[in-house]
Amino acid sequence: MPRTFPPGFLWGTATAAYQIEGAWAEAGKGESIWDRFAHTPSKIEDASHGDTACDHYHRWREDVALMKALGHQAYRFSIAWPRVRPQGRGPVNEAGLDFYSQLVDDLLAAGLTPVATLYHWDLPQAQFEAGGWPARATAEAFVEYADLVTRALGDRVKHWITHNEPWCIAFLGYQIGEHAPGYKDEWGNALAASHHLLLSHGWAVPVIRRNSPGAEVGITLNLVPVSHASPSAADYHAGRRFDGYFNRWFLDPLFGRGYPADKVAEYTALGHWDPALVRPGDLEAVAADTDFLGVNYYNRHLARDEQAPDNAPPVEFLAPRSEWTDMGWEIYPDGLYQLLCRLHFEYQPRKIYVTENGVSYGDGPDAQGRIADTRRIRYLGDHFAAAHRALQAGVPLAGYFVWSLLDNFEWARGYTQRFGLIYVDYATQRRLPKDSAYWYRDVIRANALPDEG
Image 1: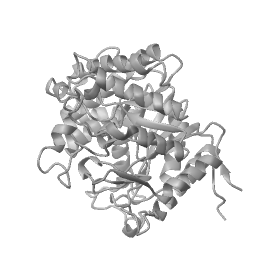
Image 2 (image 1 turned 90 degrees about the vertical axis):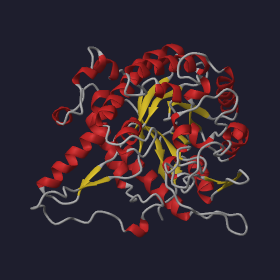
Image 3 (image 1 turned 45 degrees about the vertical axis):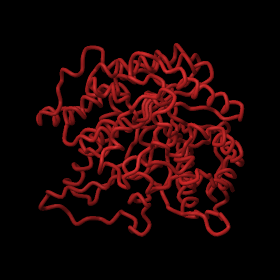
């Protein structure tokens, strides 16, 4: 029998402003930290940038029409802070607000539910220079920006995400250095940024509710289930440490538990964590009641303590590298099932959306213009099946957003990766739906996966 999803289950795709919009300095838009970072030599793998990207700023009507033709029910997009408030604070760019207002109107006219992310990494450069996320003032500026946008769009947008992947913003930006602003080993700044991101989320939730009555409000985290490379105690503790760094550091405070005590002790002992960052009332604000948790899932973490001399022999969990994605990520659908179940049973969010899941493969058009991306179809089918299993286990999963609608600028990897259901010829900006786009259309139409037989 087909594996059917619940009535009202929301199927869509997701994008981010800097990755698709282009028009980086057009119509009053200010510079973002990603504009600056991408134009810095050696930061992007193929020396590219998002100046034009998919030119969505000029082609959004075409893209909405494609979503409608392909049967999508919802579209998760992000709003570029520097497009609507170029300096982070101060004057409003009405042309930027008008762009998003027109996009929302067109989505609604096409029968698509708009799901808006307020922050997907493109901080105004001026706000960065005023301190960026390590400064508490940026949390205050974010709330002002959220107020501005939700007053303008809150009558029509009824699904709001405050932040996308605060781990990436804080740790890829300041500790690992792979993303803007590209700082390395600045643990103090990374941890301060993580707190101010969470604080700005909590402060913004009641503002959004006031401006958008009846809306659902949540946050999106990138989360990674942890497997252990062997059954040794050393590998168990390595997994626990990584889980605290990547998952619990954000989940625990959002769900009213405060920052995990083991990580606070570790970071404090190392001189990374300043307890004075957390002022009275902060943790209560961070734990603001939300309507859903957004989950971005791509792979798992295999924990192994390489420093343990008496560690047990490793157990082979990983799929062969020949089956990994073009990003170099293992394919592990069961990790999505494990993650969704953990979130439900351990944290009990009211509702969960898979706000990103997808795969990078470089399949291009053949001589007839067809893109037979069978590996992507298999990947999505396996992950949808894992989500269906989670539903059967009682997880309150309400929707699924495939990453991504379009091939696009993949951050530090530039244009070397293709995640889209729709192929983009960057030289001509021609859009070509892949076989996976038509397969997904049929899944949405049936609200079910095809018979396994």
